[in-house]
Image (tube, rainbow over the protein chains, first blue to last red):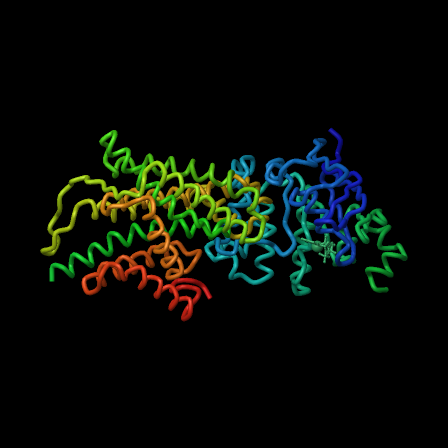
Length: 238
Length: 284
Ligand SMILES: Nc1ncnc2c1ncn2[C@@H]1O[C@H](COP(=O)(O)OP(=O)(O)OP(=O)(O)O)[C@@H](O)[C@H]1O
Ligand SMILES: [Mg+2]
């Protein structure tokens, strides 16, 4: 099998009559961290929704582990190991932290490894250990993000998609999130990251795409993009 | 004095059954954001199911109720796919109309086949003497069964994977999809369970009171009042609301005519909506 876990080909979609994506193609390789940057409203979340199956694809294809999943329902994609940590965390607020983590391991394949995954997650986020019985909705933003990441990891992802995991966090916590992402990368977890913190993201990523107005306008290694004049001007404010 | 004891005990026992019915309504609202206007029709269906099984097979309602539960889940799931699935994402008015049509169909067919003559199930278990008051054993069983079904529902929702998935869907349906939950199945199951609880409550109540196909409407109103009383989306609240409702109804009728009860229930509904719209146990 090739090392391409996710392949998106000429994807077009939108909401109602309004087209948002105009032929997006990208790849995420096994064991690598792939990042998408782009300004607000450029269609990053929409792209991730199409990949995970919560908005229908109009045109183009989504291939996961070599299989065409373009028209597969969202829950079947999750079964296959396509795991999403959504923008805004989307925890189950009335459930305890433990139950949220448990829900992460809902699929058959993840259920079988629930204990190991839980150990892994609590090792990564020791602070969650004392909070297991707290309702997720009552936690601080930073803690909620840990639960959201933990819940994603409980699913034994073959591809972990992270939509702006540092959104709305204090600078110190943003760094924490990125150090976790770095750790996961070192563990060999394949990730697709969407981020607004362009500088740090480009520092740790293996490959990056720049999105603007529903199209991929540039791609390259983190280093290349960071040196690029356009990226500097548009996103790094230099 | 005996009259008071009897009223209080009856109130508690029947209140538990009202609570059970209301939990069915509550569950459907909480998980699907659907106000189920076919609730009463299904309560009546439960009554008739219990009645016919008793009449033709001689099986006690307290045994056949498990069959009613199972049939209710299946019937509710079928009803979901027929009437609700296509409009579940549409504005609330559409789902309201969908469940209302469901109710009209059931009541229309029911009136045609069963007529509106009153029926009753006489299980004939006799009474027991409690603190000097005679309480029919049926009423006691109704209370116990309602408690057990409530407990079973609680265990199901909090201790099983499927139950947790139902709760997850009620809190964030998109997130539930990301977890791998088949949300279409879960929505239909939640509707099925809500309908089954309505039918079970109907089947139990039918062992105590006479009924027609139209009786469900009375209990539907009770369920709505109980949900508002206890706070929509709060199953525990529904149980407490049911107890309050049962007690009020039974104690009040010592002093006033039965015919005023629906009026008083409606009055309570309006007052609560004015004073504390989130319900006694509801969140702000
Ligand atoms: N549910 C929706 N219905 C209609 N339009 C939507 C919906 N969600 C997003 N849009 C529109 O689609 C466009 C792209 O939005 P999207 O959320 O994909 O952007 P994004 O790149 O993720 O932005 P951000 O960085 O702010 O998260 C925006 O113009 C937005 O208004
Ligand atoms: Mg976004």
